[in-house]
Image (cartoon, rainbow, N blue to C red; front, top):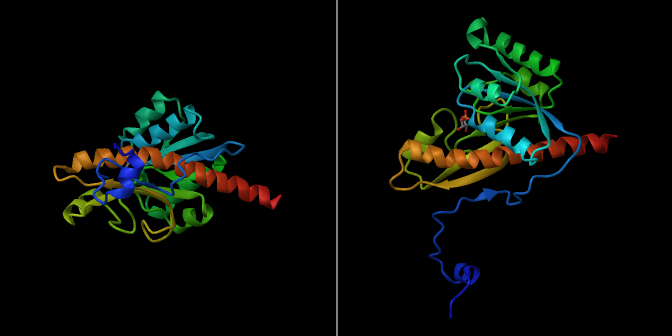
Amino acid sequence: MKQDNREYRENNLSYDLNEQNLISPLDTESPLYEPKIRLGILASGNGSNFEYIIKSIQNKKLNADIAILIVNNPNCLAIKKAIKYKVPYVIINHRDFDSRFEHDMMVMKKLEDLSVELVIMAGWMRIVGEEIINRFNNRLINIHPSLLPSFKGIDAIQQAIDKRVKITGCTVHYVQKEVDSGSIIIQAAVPIKEKDSKETLKKRIQNMEHIILPLAIAKVANNIRNIIKDNK
Ligand code: GRF
């Protein structure tokens, strides 16, 4: 008799998981909260995660307004996406500042002036200082292309390939002083295939990033709204 999928899974240890990507926590429904959360997005690169945040808002999966996109790199493609979707943006080029501290202060001032409630590092290729971390305590999150705590720091995808691990993935976490070390909000696992190049693997990791980042934002926003409610 033909078994259904579930029975097959339960009875066969050799069940083929290769095409599956696991997200954890498993509740993949975006929480609904009110009112909208005001986001500040920090980006330095292509802005694909930024674009998926916009799409999640448009699709009503994320109850948010993007107050500002801040970029530190005047040539980054994220700017083009801001223009395309009519999201306000500002270039705060770190090269125009004498120190990391001064640059951080300008970023922080912009976020404060616009009453940003939750800050998203969506491919922000800079270490943020303690002032921003403390000011946005539990309201500053980052996405990293590995299953933390493995492969912290730069070129995490290449690090995973070099170590020949069989599963890698991506992580959204709170930002702490130590790079890529804050509490984990959500992770997705991505199998590494034998024929993977860095580019093919990156594509599959990014596909999962585009799912988990908006979800993580909704979870954190929901927490922020519930904390406010509890305090009233
Ligand atoms: C992502 O892979 C993210 O994990 C890392 O930087 C990359 C940004 O990609 N921190 P994009 O600019 O959102 O396309």
